[in-house]
Length: 153
Image (tube, rainbow, N blue to C red):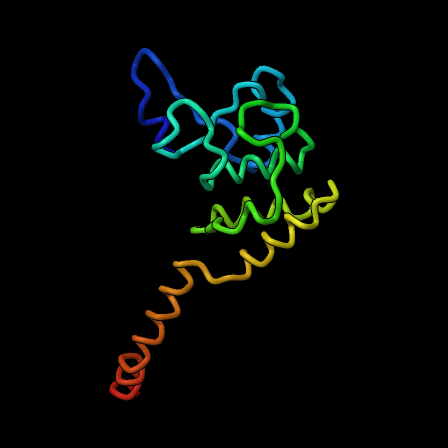
């Protein structure tokens, strides 16, 4: 959203593809041989210039490529497949990540990977940090809300 602010009088920067899901964007890269060969998404500080295959973003991209039937066609990741056990430490931290994983459920099942979809469904059913915070905040504010209603009512 900030990309246009990097523009100058001599160069315009536009952000394209905001309406596309992460799944759709990955599908475009996966259908482009050079893009699939060189896809690099890793955010792990341990892996410089390579995909670690273990961080959330690597796992998410690998799952997407599995759903597209393309993970085994690239050497960009250290593994050519994922097992349900490989998702044990995966943490879905925010609504964006949850949305990305929800988008994978049906394509994974269609690809015959109900094992991975089932793990994602269990993880998506767990409350996120934000939902836990909001629940705690609502509970903490109940006495103040009651007092406010008593005073005004």
